Image 1 (tube, one colour):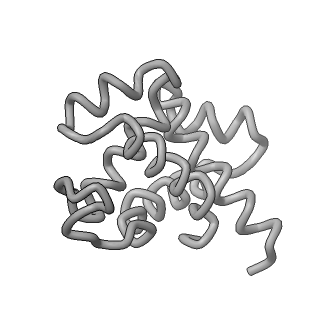
Image 2 (tube, rainbow, N blue to C red):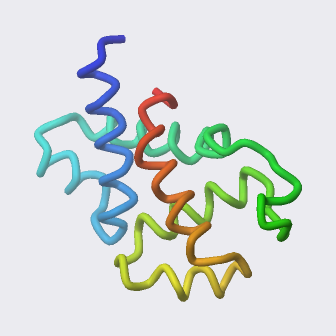
Length: 115
């Protein structure tokens, strides 16, 4: 798979997260791609996002760390939310705001590895 193809799939998956209110058909229409590609990218992201996050029982600050699947879920929620909502997401999941922002950053930087 070419680098540009991986980049497109990553972009489609992350747009599907960001534009959660848009049906896949609208995303495909807006981006000029087949709807099956958007659905495939979304499924790949959801099924494999946890692989991006290494397991650590405790952080450097010695506080509790969720397992990778929970980190992925928090990162997806943070990606979908507005930047000013990371504090609410952190409170909802009982983690620090810095962790939420860090895991979101990991998702954005490493998502192309999933494809």
